[in-house]
Length: 118
Figure 1 (cartoon, rainbow, N blue to C red):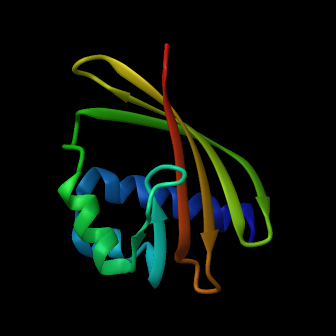
Figure 2: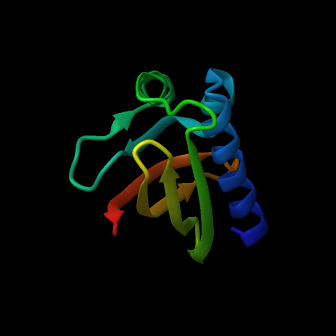
């Protein structure tokens, strides 16, 4: 995987996060993808469940900001360090994403690690 391909996927993820558009969200993931919302928690399994659960927990547009850095790529696995800031109450979360892309450039495994930053 090239860094440009991975960065493009991350940008599409952010765009889908902003839009909460089901086809846009679904287009990020393979049919059998796994999405871990926290380490050691059961993942959402499959594109349909990922879209459904994402929309059940969606962030409303304009209520958050996100910035990120690509920290590394190893084969089909990419690592992102991110910072998510919510306005009310003001809270910033530190994020680490592990994203495994398939041959077609869609995600087949997503693991999100997060914590409140002080």
